[in-house]
Length: 79
Image (cartoon, rainbow, N blue to C red; front, side, top):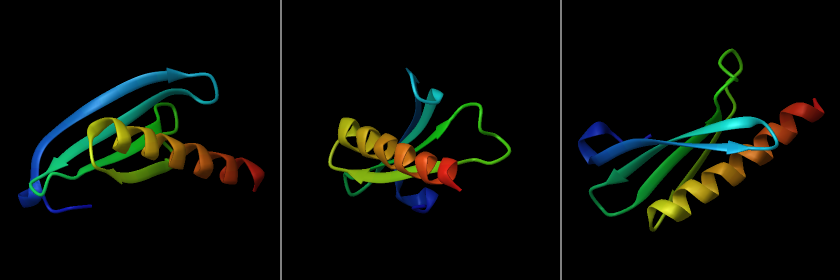
């Protein structure tokens, strides 16, 4: 993750989804204008599966991190 010195703003976004339940996304805005998002399912505390993505804006970072989360979650379910 980027160092705290590079962060300008941080917030949490929650959304309900059919596949795994509630997705919590930690969204960070960096000094260079990038957005970094980390998404995870709220109920997966013991085995946290995380999707991470960078984006040019908030929406892109959140969408891409949720897509990565879904991919990682499906991989875990197959094993």
